[in-house]
Image (cartoon, rainbow, N blue to C red):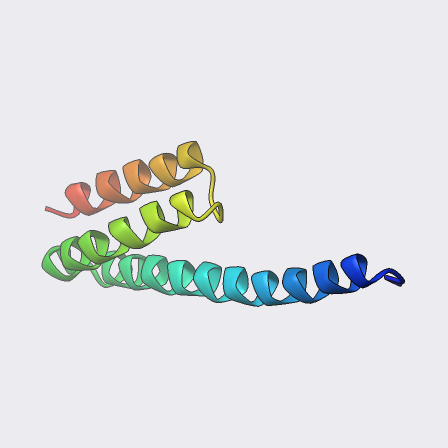
Length: 87
């Protein structure tokens, strides 16, 4: 347990940051799930729209340190290939 005032403050800050990061991660997953659902339904127009909505959210996750940039690029590449294959 944190004893010094500085360590206590750090613990409070970490708690707040964890909550924010968790919300961001959840939001990214939601956008990705919408793309997956559209692909599963076979609706290319909806999948394309969902992918365009998901892309900036994933890139924002990269800038905020939630995702590694290569991870986001890999996921976007694979999703876009699957959306393209629907056509």
